[in-house]
Amino acid sequence: MKEDSLANKVYSEVRKKILSSQLVGGARLVESFWAEKMSVSRVAVREAFMRLAGESLVEFGGKGGCFVRSMTIEDIKEIRELREILEIGALKILFARKNKEIVTELELICDDFSDMVAKGYYGGACEADVKFHEKMIEGTGNSRLISMYKNSNIPLFHMRLGAAMDQMEDYQDTNKEHRAIVEGLANDDWELAHSSLVRQLDRGEQEALELA
Image 1 (cartoon, rainbow, N blue to C red):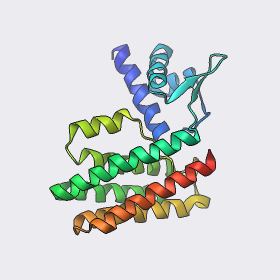
Image 2: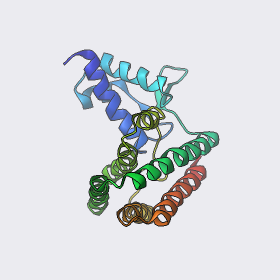
Image 3: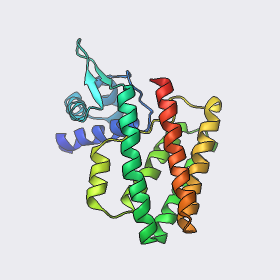
Image 4: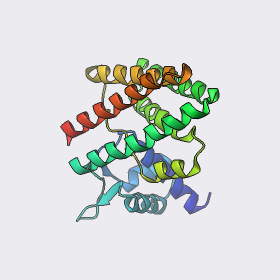
């Protein structure tokens, strides 16, 4: 496999971990660890880190280390505003198009999320959460919206790293909100879907601000 493909492999994996809050702000990214974990060269890892830095997901410290970039209060507020614009916009498109296949795919993601939580795979649950929101965007079929969402590197910020039994309420709330959004889509109930999405965005912003 070519070096650029290997670098993209590392980039995709680290980006996924950051956006799903499995790697939090301030976490150090060690080249040798990721090279071994992904079975690639340190050159490929370094290239991936540089790409992530260009997207403001990581930053290099004064002594050369690479760290996940921490979110400021302003970051959190801007992300909350952007998510509301993009995701509620996506929801409107989904209601207009009434695509049953998307509803089914979102239901499967909800089931995957529940299964991961039940088995204690909290990292997998966080990834399923990110996937749910990405699928809403992808389901619109609007290439410009999809590109804007992806390029914005919107993180999941209502889950706390290491969440286990003490954070079970958060997972339960997320599951209820996701399923209410799907139920709203399935039954053409805009108020249910819209209020559930806004509630999740509000909750996520508040929890992120408490941790900032």
